[in-house]
Length: 266
Image 1 (cartoon, rainbow, N blue to C red):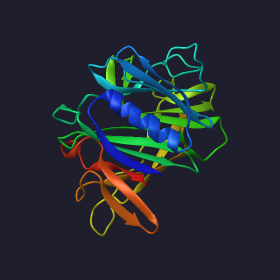
Image 2 (image 1 turned 90 degrees about the vertical axis):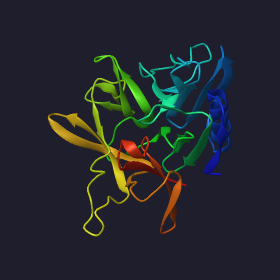
Image 3 (image 1 turned 45 degrees about the horizontal axis):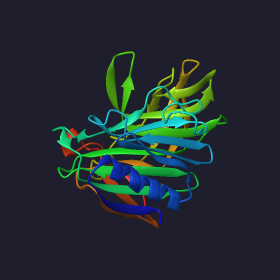
Image 4 (image 1 turned 120 degrees about the vertical axis):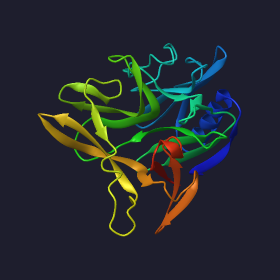
C-alpha cells in the first residue's frame, strides 16, 4: 500500500492517518501518544528519524515536524537526539487566500529505494500544505542524507517564516545540518520553470539539492520519487502516467500562487 487517501476534520485525525500509514509501510513507530490537546508521533526507517506534533502552536499549525538522529522516551517531542532547532510546519490556513485547511483531503505516499514518506493535504478551497521525509539520492559520500521538508520554516535571523523549506542531515565542511535549521543554506528545486520547445511548459523535473562549499555550488543529490511540474493544465490530484510510473500532481500552494507544482510517484 504505497498510496492512501482520506478525509480529516482535525489535526489529530491527520496525524492518526500518518501514524497508521507509516506503520503499514515499513516505518518503525517509536511512539504515538497524547500530549495536551494534541498528539506526538515518532517514526524512523533506517537513518531517517521524523518527529511530529499537533500540539505545537495549534492555533497556527496543523502539524509540526522535526528531523533528528534517534528517539528517547525521556525527551520532549522536539528535543530528540541532534534535532534541528526549529520545526517545519503545515499551517491551518493555506493558500493565497489563507483558507481554512480543514476538513482536508489527505494524500499519503510511501516509497523505498530510497525511502520516502510524504503527504499533501488539500483544503476545501483546493489550497495545499505538504511534508516529505526520506533519504536523498546522494551524489557524494557524506553522512547521512536524511532530508525533511515542510511547508514553512521559522528563520530566527530575520524573525519570519519561509515557505517550502528543506533540512538535510549531512556532515559537510564541519556542519551537521544544512538548510532549514542549519548554518549553511541549501539550494533546491533546480530549474523547475525551464520550458521545452514543444509546448512551453516544464516537464517533470528532478529536484536537485545543492550546497555552497569552497565558493562553489556542490550537488548533493536529488529528492527521491518527487518532481517539479508545471500545473497549467492540471488540477490537484491529477495522475500523470509516464511508462510504468504514475505521478500524482499537486499545486505548491494553490493555483493563484504560480504554475510550479509537486509530483509524487504513487
